[in-house]
Image (cartoon, rainbow, N blue to C red; front, side):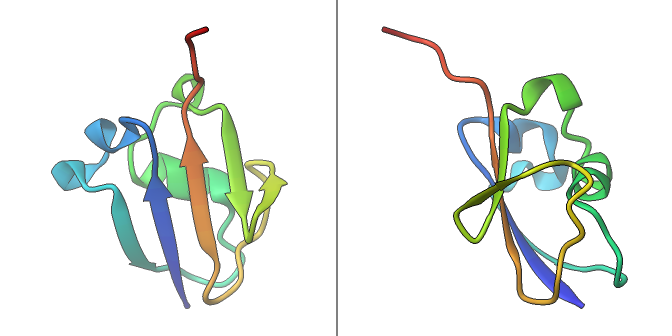
Length: 77
């Protein structure tokens, strides 16, 4: 099945090719956490995961056509 992953706010620097947008072919039952590990995004660099505008955990099982958004911690004031 195919999913889309968008790495926001500089997280692309950890991923292969430093790409922000990834279209991946993954087996059914793949979790958001597995995607992060496949793309070499360190867990401590991730603040929020979302699928279809809904916050999800790393154990979230992705479905065909899902778009996983990955956000880093934010700072500032």
